[in-house]
Length: 264
Image 1: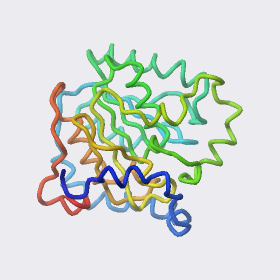
Image 2: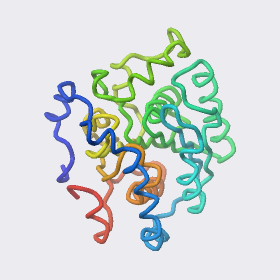
Image 3: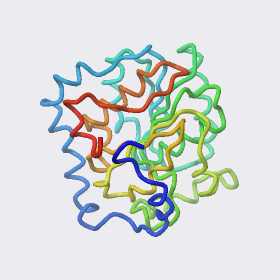
């Protein structure tokens, strides 16, 4: 096991963890903009980001966000040559009937246009959707990348977004939303969970699971609201998308960038 990867014992105790500190939570808006400030410095080395086979990539936003929140990330991935699509469902208010009905259709349509299985990237709640798409439609999902997605949540207090999620609960699809145990169960396609100990919205322990031949956890340093513009996260995504279909290899950043990934 590589240094920095979370031992199973730490994961088993995730249910004892509360949400992030008040300091991290209230500083989220400011820290979330930090990635934009880093872009001018990061642009030169991001031009050397790995490039893959131009397959389809579906990007899903977090709770209360829309495709606007992932626009910069999607633009970067298009420049790398991928056939990138947002979710086209407006603001993410949770697992409504519309979301549960249309997301599989969006996935299938993109897989058809791009000629094969699609990589699905989900930010926060979007990552929970991404994993469920892979669970239900494994033949159409090449891999899943979750960005600060609390799929291993065991207590509502682990997320400062729980109140907002529950406020829209009357909109959610009755009888169709999987329970916590189902959401936390491993999926059958390659997956990478990207998390940050500086996350001010959800406990980072709720965003990872034990590593297997199909799953890897990778830590970055950014706020919850900053994953979509964090240069280290962008490089990591590019690296994962460039892995050939059917091949599995762990993430190993180049020596010059290793300081961006704690423990590696």
